[in-house]
Image (cartoon, rainbow, N blue to C red; front, side, top):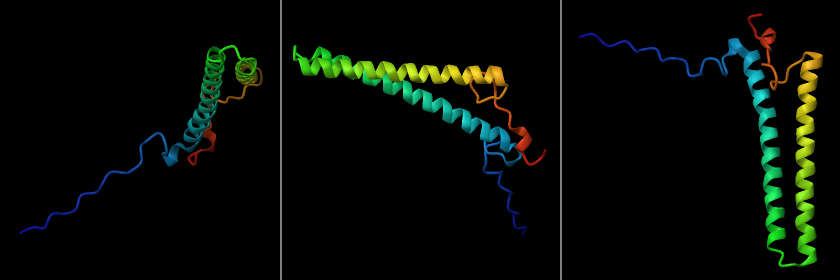
Length: 117
């Protein structure tokens, strides 16, 4: 009777994302995703703050303090959104003018830092 030989298991990593031979692209995708996440969270925060301010004004019942609080929330949400959009525009401008890439207008290429190069 022959004993069966154990089979070799496949590798546990997903090729292309955390593949050690592709370290530059993995870092690039993480950085690009992180920056995009920051902008998404900032936009959602401004939107929710705007809604809370609008609801505060609607439900104020004519009270001057609640109206002022709602108006201030809306104003700060709009200021935050303007700052967020201005920072996005500055990043896009720098990417185009200076030729470096943060993953917004062009793909990040950090392949020169991978171990094979």
